[in-house]
Length: 470
Length: 80
Image (cartoon, rainbow over all chains, first blue to last red; front, side, top):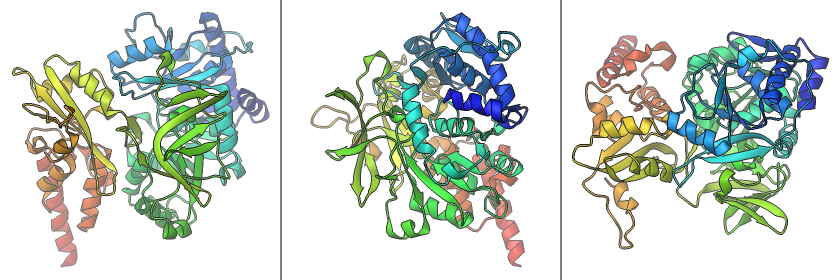
């Protein structure tokens, strides 16, 4: 993986590796700056490094520096609440944060990354770490779960992604990077681009979720491949000029992170009749994605529920056990940090991950049919309602809570709703404010309603069916 | 088009209708609600595009109602 980036630095040193709003970094410069930064990282220690992704081009210098130095990186968003950041730092064992922002984290040195490229030796020896990155996902027990992804996992993912048509055939193309590094959708665009000699195109970080900014970036930079969530693709379609006439270079949209509805696929193919529209599937625990299928008008005409892959091109072995999608093989991680079990299994020398996704394989196609537990996907984010409930219950003045996903008739989550039982002097506004200090914005329920008590069923458990009728 | 009912349907909370609620900063107008709101405008034949609207006008129920009224008036003029 690293040798491929290094090879492109030698073979095409002037080609743009990263094209940001403020800065364009060539492969040659990326490699040299990353080497100097890696020199510091190698001297500083071996523990994981918190990597604050503020959307700037320089973040990718740090990422490559971590790869060179063999330091595991832990990507986090700059708006991560302090308490969650502390939890992530503690669980990952990070001792250094590469950031321009002062982070009051006990036991973690903060270092402005850009300063590190000015000094240091070049070239440096490479460090070794089995874990490339750790991404934290929502955990039902109330704390985020750390998913360590190894070099072998990432290689397995990359081998598969680079076999996908049309991605395998593109040379020096421009790839949109929209999702934050803390969201593993980004693994697809970052590693496909950097390990393939392509250019990773960054939108203005201040407006990265704005469809006008994405449209103007796609157009101005003649982007050929866009990696998006279906929700974000829907947002792009709100732009009246998001079509092949105005974006003639856009050749492939790779969608992953949540269910793709037929209606959205139809609209995308209407706007871009010659588009290669890929519907990919996979959990963070199996390195971003394990399967994908090209969505065509013919497929749309025959499949009311869109498949998420074909059995003849999988990143890792996939099987169905009792209706659940189970993954094994090289893309599957080696267990959560801290020994949390979750869906991870080790048996008979095999690592496997029981996804909790209901699925089936029919005529060589893989289908994902929903969840067997409460976990939800909302705007591409994976959320455990139990984690939000645990954080609500930890707020002084909250006596009990329940969190539900409100869905459309088609089953798409449209919002999170919380019901809380409050002490007399507590208000909803206070609960919302307290929750914002504990959870990232995407996990804050849009609606929080106070009830005198939570309804319970005959088993003494919260009656969620009753709550859905309120 | 009844903007208040639409927002109630999207947010399922009457708190959203309070005149001083900031729909963007308050998290009410998230991606889903934003997409649904503009899809509803399109269904009504209103030429309202997020890229051509001052985002601040989406902050309050009153602001959205004014946008819709102006778009409806514009659509009426176009028909005449």
